[in-house]
Image 1: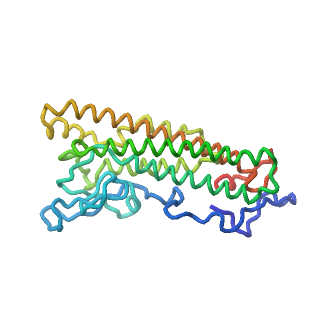
Image 2: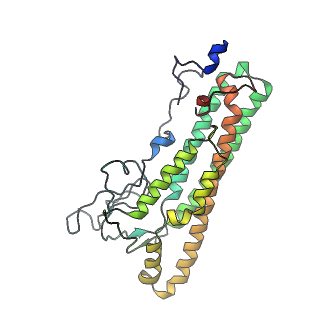
Image 3: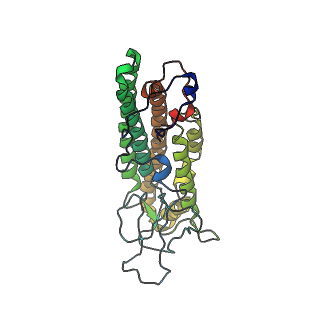
Length: 305
């Protein structure tokens, strides 16, 4: 967000105006939207035709933005893209289709999107610092590149972890079961609803990075405690292991599941790590970016920029 050109900081009454970043320095880059608009309030599950209706495809499954699979004309489930959670938005899924019910949700996709958005926010902050470079102290000139370097390290680590998680969960042999958790009384997919609420909560927490509302990741740590129940369909897991697979394949399935579960936990830990690095970077650069002398209290609204 940017303070309007006619806005006046609280400090104006004391005869001191904060320097504003140059107009145009905060133009969003394509695909790097604010956290509140990248994803809706709950998971998207595409509307599908009733059983028996012609779909023009063999199984009628349609993948969504966070499903982690390319579009193939099949009803999506376990996703978290925009649109669901609004009034009147029904969450549905087909009763049965060739793609099956995914055991792991696409946490890797969420991680990459959040990491990109957080990194972009720091890059924009650095642009503001550079615009004020002539008036910076020596320590302020050093703080920006150090903060950016630390964030970049976390971005690379996050992307590597996400790539590994995607590779594991998308195992052709084990990734989906013939059925998953039953729909609720309203015809909604409970797992998709939970995961959609989870992704919305994560993004809301990350929006507090760099602000006085940040709590050093405590809220994210609380989400990690119940992560696996949120990012998996345990019904699909049991069906896949005990019904869909021959007994000779169950040991391999258990190994795959345990490895993927551990990677999902490690990936979420990476999200916590990058959020802490971004918070530190934003706090370290807020005075330099907006022309406040070191040690002076910065109004809250600047922290969220």
